Amino acid sequence: MTESSAEFKARLIRRTGLSSDAVTAAWPEWWSVEAEGSPSAAAELRFSIARKLGLDPRSLISENEPRFIWNDSARFKNLKEGAPGERPIISSFGTALTRLLLQGVPGAPNTEAIHATDLRNAILATSQSVGLIELLSTCWGLGIPVIHLRVYPLSAKRMSAMSVRVGDRYAILLARDAQYPAPIAFYLAHEMGHILLGHLEDGCSIVDMEMLEDLGTAEDSEEMQADAFALELLTGRAQPELVVQGEGRGAQQLAREAARVGQIERIEPGTLALAFGYAAKAWPTAIAALQHIYGRPLDVSGVVNTIASGQLAWRDFPDESESFVRAVMGLPHG
Image (cartoon, rainbow, N blue to C red):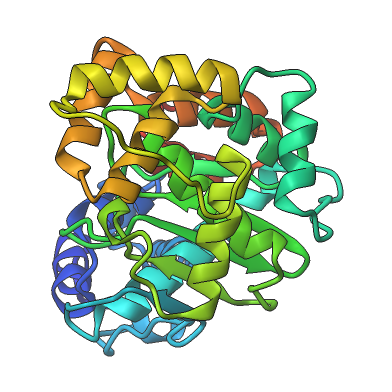
């Protein structure tokens, strides 16, 4: 191998379409200037990166064209545009990351079919409503790890979330950023729907490109089922019925009503505001109401990953896997 590590890194980014952040996150910490001249170290570098990014390690030897392993294992939902080459990148990155992530989730999962109403009732037995924190606790309790990607495989972040199955295990990778918990709670509940409704076969993933504004426009039966599951889990109804009355329905009024009605109906106020946005086709008002409901923007991804960090059995990770998972989650090295 005559190619330097810098040349290899540049070629990998150029030919695969992977973001430089993803390749940097996958770069092993043990690599050094001293390793540069070692053929065995150069080979191990390529195998290490291949494991983390879902690449065929044989395709990284010499200057062959890099190939992704999981080219067609993902079903993309609401993919409106974008280069065809994005699909194998997202699919392989998500599957490879899930395989590593599950190393830190001991125990058997409990993902038998659970009706959204039953799950909601179980959560409400100990909580006032079903919000992001409750959903995260439920997922981890079921053996489903949930993280929020702070390193994305592509330069453009267009994915909302991804659910992945490896054997009889699952993981949910959140990607869409939000300043308030309610939008992320919906994306998470939607992915839970895909998993608990049995939409994923072994080795399969579902990549949702849908934004909240697309809610109710899906023609795909799995998407409609996952939307209904999410709404029933969050609100108690697969199709929430909201009666809009009066004039001057501004963001502050919506926030007040969401807090009042949410207390009665046991629906998290932010979720109720978004349900109004969906029912009344008033997304700008609904999004603006979130500021009044929560008071200030929140580090939602930080909340998700702080909980994940406390749940993952870091001692069970090989050093290289731990380093990569921490980098992808935006966590300091342990």
